[in-house]
Image (tube, rainbow over all chains, first blue to last red; front, side, top):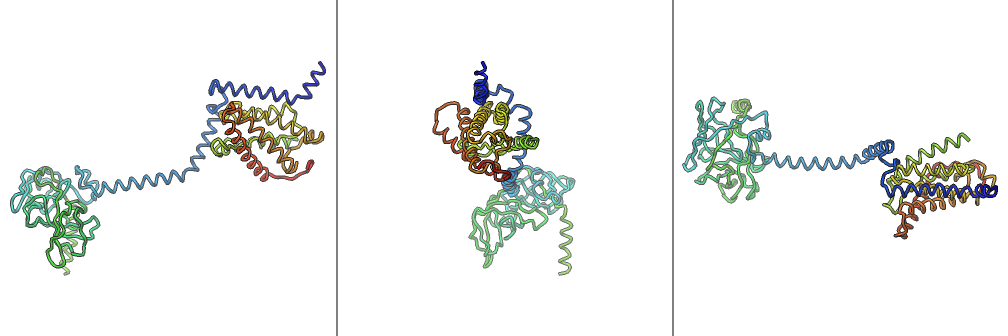
Length: 281
Length: 174
């Protein structure tokens, strides 16, 4: 008995090892059989909250990457927004239009077309809004996808519009949204309601077939940047230093239903200021 | 005595936190993992009773297991390491050193002894660890490669830690 005791003490390290090791292996095997059955795992409250903290620090370390991703996303969204802004005149609702074009400056009155002509030499449109609705002479008229004309005469509840398809109508346009080249849009000599001409484009300006034409915003009649049409023909010479361009209109004059009358709130101010120039000159 | 006791507790806390928060995320997939927490067991004082050594090693392993979700794997490896430690001390240290209750650090024991101690201890620990974890002798070459690279990795990190905390006091064995 004493010898056995001595033997155990002599090799106690080995026996303790066997004991602890077997217990460890038992734990391993038990855990393999019953996954996560044991209470010492990461669902444990202490361990779980610890990892939560570690993760919050890890997140902090990856902030730079997250920032870059957000910046990229911002750039993408901005690009999309830009597309919408430049395509504003293609939109269908007047609310959308007012949202895109300078809100504080322009008001829009919706009107229905009650009479329309496209086949005369001078074409006029009649709408169902008049002075009672704030329509005044010389206001611009647009549709959701282009320009219609200017208000000619106003009665209490109706107005007549001098259509774009009228020899006297002139609208200031630019060949791109940044106003580097501009001319005036007229119906010209043709008899087709789908086409109009841009006159007096300087010869040095390069124009391309298919490029869009916008309103310039120089007059008080139309806001800047409304799309009028696309260039279809560029080789019409009108003089030595100017050329004419044929434009396919985006406005469909054949079935015109709803139009928007543009009210420029600052028109009086602008005209008054410009009047001084004439006085001085 | 009390100093050594407190040092060991501090070492335990710091190394466990480093292990589960930092070293766990470092490594090359499963080929080279990093377990410098075994320094806790390696640096326990020399004169510690066998039972206490096994118990502390077992609890250290179990603590790491709790964070690794590997119930018993690290505990068994640590127990094996403790047994190796007793064996190694018995054959390399004389009786006086064995009962001197000092910490077997690089500074205290010299580089030759410490490096052999560290290298063999790490190999034993990783051998048991990986085989217990995989629990089969299939793909044995892959397992041995993991053990080899992990050991190199662990030894390198432990040497760096030892160098940072190097404190040359006495040289009993050289």
